[in-house]
Each structure stands twice: as C-alpha cells, then as structure tokens.
Length: 560
Image (cartoon, rainbow, N blue to C red; front, side, top):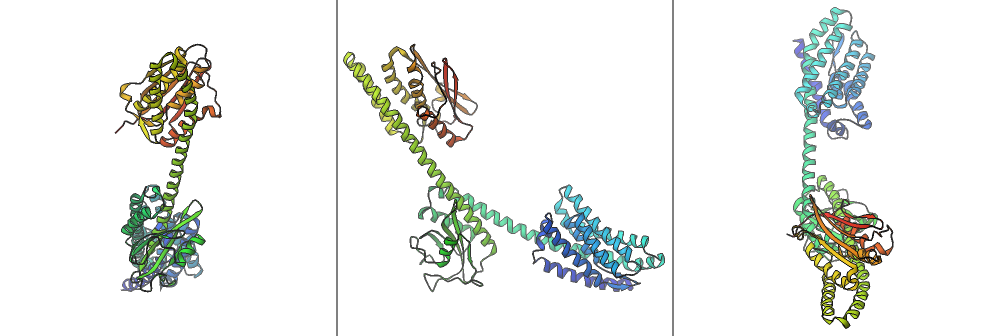
C-alpha cells in the first residue's frame, strides 16, 4: 500500500515535469535540446535548465523513512543524454550537492548516485554519437531503459554507502519500485516531447528547403536576361505559385515591375512606388515586416485593398539596392514565419541571379568588344597588303588577280557575317583558306601551307576567330621574317573528349610579351577560358630559331 501511495505521489511530480517540458519547448532552451548541445552557450543553457529540474525534483519529493523519494534523476539523466558526459556530470553533481545540503542518512549516497546517473547517461550519449546513431538518443524506449539502469545503480549506491544498512535496505524496499518506474516513464515521456518537436522542426525545414529548391529550379536563368518587367513578371508568378501567399510584387528603385495576386486590379506594373515601407526598405537596405498586428499595414493605393500584412526585402546587386521583393497576405490570413524566412531566402537567391545576369552581360559585351578589336586589328593591315599584292599581279596576270579579288571578297564577307557565336571547324578552315590564298600570292614560293585536319573532326564546333588570328601571327611575326621559305602547318587531333588544334611555323621567333603583337592570341585564349573553363585555352611551344607551335585546346563538340 505504501508503494502505491508513493507511486501516485511521484506520478504527480512527474506530471509537473511534463508541464515544464511543454513550456520549455516554447522557449529558446528547446534549440540545444533538439539539435544536441555542441556549443558552449547551448551547454550552459542545458546545465541551468536541468539543474533547476533536479533541484525541483528534490524539493517536490515525498519524505519517507528518513529520506526523500524524488524525481531528481529525470533532470540528470536527460542532461547527460542531450548534453554529453560533462553536462550530465555537472547537472548530477549540482543536484547531488543540493540534496547533500538537506542532510539525512542518505545525503552522501544521493549526492554520489545523482552524479553517477548524469555521468552514465552522458556516456550513453557519447557512445551513440561515436557510432553515428544520433536518432537513437531520442528513442523513448532507450531513454526509459537508460533511466531504469541509472535508478538501479542509485539503489545499489544507497545500499553500499548509506548507514545504518538496515535502514538503507528498508528504504530501498519502499522507494525502489516507485522511483524506477516513475523516473523511467517520466524521462521517456519528456524525451518523447523533445522528439516530437524535433520532428516538427525537421518537417518545417524540409518544406522550406523543398520550396526554396523548387523556386530556385524554376527561376534559374530567368533574370540572366535582365531585371525588367518581362523577366520579373515570370519570377513573381513562380514565387506566387510556390509560396501560396496572397500576392507577390517586385520593384526596382523607382517603380513597380511586377504584381501577381490579390490587389492586382490597382497595383499596376509600371507605376511609381507609392508605399512608404518600400521606400524605407530601399533607403535603409533593411527588411521591413508589417504583420498587420504589431505594425499595421495599409495599402497606399486603395482603401478597399484586401491586403493586410507585408514582407518587403531589398534586392541587392553587389552593395547596391536595386529593388525589392514583396510578399503579401490578406487581412483574413496570418503571415506565417515560414514564409517570412522563405521570403528573405528568395531575395538572396534573386539577388545572386541578378548579379550573375549582369556579369554575363558584361562578359558578353567584353567578348563583342574584343571581337571588334580583332576585326580592327586584322582587316586594315591585311587589306593594305592584299591591295598591294593585287596591284602588282593585275598587270602580269589579270586572271589570277580576278581570282584573288574573289578570295578577298569571300574573306571580307565572312568577316562581316561572323558574330560572337560558334561555327564548325570546316567553316573556320574555309575562311582561313581564303586568307592564305591571298598571302601565298603575296609571298609566292616563300610561303608553304599544309593543312592536316581529319574529316571526322571538321564538324566540331569552335568559337569564331579561333584559328585565323593564330595563322596571321604565324605569318606576320614568323615566316615573313625568314629569308628561306616559310612553312605553316595547321592541324587537329582528338584527345579523348578534347579537341586539340595547332598552328605551327618554322621560324621559332615567338617571344612572350604583352604588346599588341600578341593581342589576337590573348583574346582567343581568354574567350576559350571564359567559355569552357581554365583547363582549356592557348598554349605556346617554341624552339627558338627552329619552330613555334600554338596549340588550342577546347572541348570536343560536334554540330547538332
């Protein structure tokens, strides 16, 4: 009968523990419990929370046989399981010293046993962490078994330390079953609450991540085409569909670019920004949140607008605010904290995409400028020499002059038609052949050309103006300086998934320098690296006075 009364009394204490556990799940203390304390501030929070529970377990205990039947062990055991051996031992020691201060013939035994229970649970934490079985720490059955073992150890310590032994034995007979049963059940139920909160947090995180990933997948590449009404309308539609908020808006610094959802009848894209909150977010570069309760939201365009709360997040490009993204909820709906966090994440995502778009635009403009520079470098010099050659040939061989004029026209026409995209190797060689025909007419027997390109590789793609600047350099700074006949070789080979092209001459006159003489080759190298990666580009192999070979390496890709 005495055991039953004690079980009921301890169960009441345990119920208080569970109420406290529920309250703790609503405070910042929950975070180190859910995530397992690894940082010192989190460990300190666990220490203070569970030390308090240990002390309360003693104060609310039931006096019996000159001792106290209690639920102190729950705090020590849970602190060890969640915080590890150090936290568990310190909490147990704190609870044990408090119990020792109250006196009684079991004071020393209880101080030792409470410390031992915290240490035992901490060792279980350490063992499971080393094995990578973190989830098993939150298993209520394992917690109950750990608590049962710890309480058994406590009873043995009482029998071993407390004196007189007869009184210790009589005490253990009365308190062993109630304390082992209630403390095991209480620790398991407490941990069950923590596990449920952990599951909820993981589910919310999973939902958040899934939404963010979906938005990222659907918006990738959209803003690369610019930050304007057309692209932002697509992005706003995607965010509206994925987040399920009442409305989504995107602005630049001056006007509304896109609006989707409730209120679209009076929030018209293209109109100037009228919201003071939006202007505040742009001016301060800070997130502005009007939840409709603590900070009211009022539409500046219509008194009948149904929107009741708003999250306004700045969009940044480098260190400059270029606009905002705004999420809205109606007056009948609460703005979820999940959507608040998601909105801020979306803003970072879009800011990165805008920055990427600007980078690609600048890269494209740079490429176009470099190609125009190549045109300017090649054409006047070549045209001057070609006209001189034609003037000399016209008198003695009108037919040959007519043929050279056709080649010159084909070459110049090819230059004018070429953009910044890709062509086949066959087209590049055809363009080079027109150039070489004119140069061979100019140099006569002093220039010999050999082209060794397998037919299987002639359909491979490469950027325009890849080989022509290299061929021109080989003639202008190589073979044209020789007294003996110059030899130009153009070749291609496949090395696994790489296409290797080369242009060689027998002058061996290459000198590494940054002057305009090597401008064409440098532009070719930068274009290939920017397009395909640093592992590709132009390499120079020179044996002075013997041979120079310029090799171009790029990924092998055939025309689709």
